[in-house]
Picture 1 (cartoon, rainbow, N blue to C red):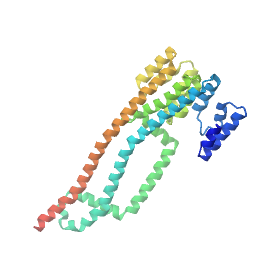
Picture 2: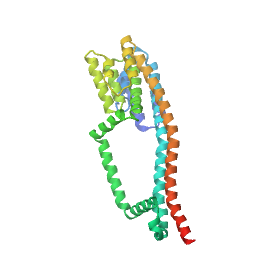
Picture 3: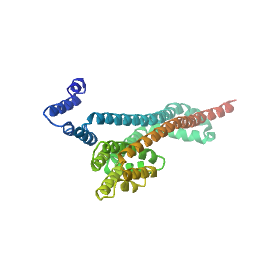
Picture 4: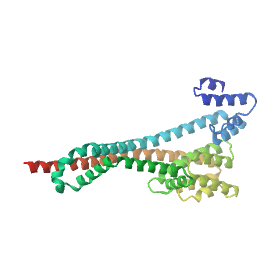
Amino acid sequence: LTTIVQQTENAKMREIVGQVALDVSEGQPFGVALSRHEAVFSSTYVNLISASEAGGFMADVLQQLLDMDRKREQLKGTLVSAATYPAFLIAFSLAVVVFVLVVIFPKFGSMFESIADQLPMSTKALMAVSDMLRDNWWLLLSVLAVFIVAARAWLTSDNGRKRIDHIKVHWPGIRDIFTQIYLVQSLQVLSLSLTNGVSVMESLDACRDVVKNSVFRDLIRNIEDKVQSGQGVAAGFAEAAFLPDLAKHMISTGEQTGNLGKVTGRIADYYEAQLTKKLEALSKLAEPIMLLVMGVIVGVLVSSLILPIFKLSRAVS
């Protein structure tokens, strides 16, 4: 711990590790020293390290925690990379459209006045949008700002967060991805906790802290109630309609055979692999789709300018 303090560049983290080192040097257990810094060390870390410290296998648990965090970061990187490219193409397309409508189209306005009754419908529509953007840009920006503020306020409210959390695990098209993400996150912690001597209730409590979704947290609370009433972990998972049947059956089998810790770890590994493949496939599929959409947008803009010019050239000749 003293060596870590000397090597840590972040001042806040160096202070925290220094306090942990001081507590340990005064005779406090390592797990107790970590528990005093809840903002940095989650209940998962504290419970696992406390159990391993008492059992004499803390080095193994620390390595397992490192592996779990590494997998979590890899999954996060896959999610970010899958969403970055489509987001960039959408932003770039919007920027190009706005530039063409605000800068390019007005230069052809006077030229097209002589054939206003012959202009294609797309040209008329885009000219109207161009005029609106140039004449009422301040109003549009004000409306956009109000919308962003209102949307942010709703998303940060309790009702907004609950609604979004419900959408993530119930809407077709996205529910499979988010459900697998939450399963991987929770079952990795559950497996690691159970296989290292942490009680079922403490393990479930750690799972609830890991997942950032109110619907999934309610599921964990329901499972805790089932365990307290003597029905078991599998009974709680079985009541969740949004979970895959495969996960429910395997958890039930694992509990019946007394291998719930190992089985949940295998389930987490399976869905992590499936999720990675799915995200990579979606990322590859998004590229041609976005390019096709951009091509259609560019085609509409170009044709809306070129067709009237051809008509003008015929009229002049």
